[in-house]
Length: 231
Image (tube, rainbow, N blue to C red; front, side, top):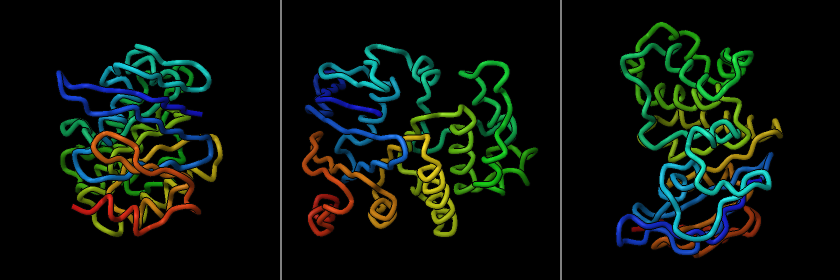
């Protein structure tokens, strides 16, 4: 289980997160919702070690992560799919997937067949350069690259951004499949409300760097959540 406990995060003098607490459980999807600029990506960057926190703690599988570097968190089973995908455009699809080998012991350095079951298009494009793929295909590649690391926590930052509806449906199916597999916690930042609502077991809404609403999917009052997401 991931337990983000009352963390504060600053960029210089500007405070981006104020006493934010979020949890993510194995076999469940936790969705973080909110408008642009309210701290959603900052929360994920803190969890994966890209941005230090000033207060509170982040605990994964019973151990505080402290100042552990991103590569150390990857070795502990935390995988990150950043906003904007950040694939390597000049590497082939196969080479992009193989960059996921970095935190793995040598015996595990192969691409799991499950990735091609979830995203068949990747198998057909293994020799194509990442930069030649469509935005939706690049998003599938970014998720596949994260899955190569065999994560037990998958952190996704707005995977539907700029993606066509047919691929959004595929990504939703993949997330649901991984959830039902029961050995992975999934933390999803999203602005597409219907996608987030249909997938989540738990949710949290951020506004101005604070959690203003949280609970289970069953307890969600949709109108209240939508109000916090509207501009």
